[in-house]
Image (cartoon, rainbow, N blue to C red; front, side, top):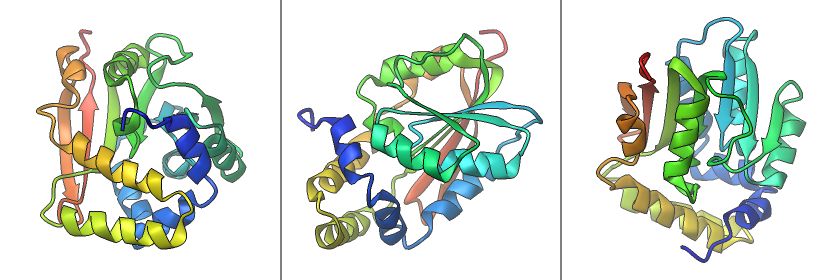
Length: 221
């Protein structure tokens, strides 16, 4: 896994990324993203950061939920950003690593990250940046795969479809490995907790295949 060029990999799979996401999730990925976004309180005129934005689903759902919100998407893949910008004309996208964000301290009311944090190389650095750019008492939503007895079946289902429909099978093989590796640390957000973040909501969906957590930044930090 260490030999994978993440930026290049996501550039390569950007063309059929949405199609494969629909297929391997049996068209449920947007449902779970919507459920996660709908669990957030989004005040009027909020400033929201869509971290690891991919092709822009989360930012679009934020704007759909609260039309006065201002959303900025950040991703390491230029091709993913191009697709996201084409789909979402009213959202600004920036190509940048999550561990080196070009924003002011305490700039955002909400940060969301869906199915991307586990692929960040410098996870501690990214958590420090989340802490830096998020306002006091701001919210951080993390959505990704969870622990499930169906995980073994799901992995093989994904790889089966990827082998048929994607020319970049290696990328989906990597993504499955990164999913399974990320699931089992004692606390993948230990740095955030050290900075005073607390989990205020945690929910499992689809028999635990998907999980999301909402963290709140301490007002004293």
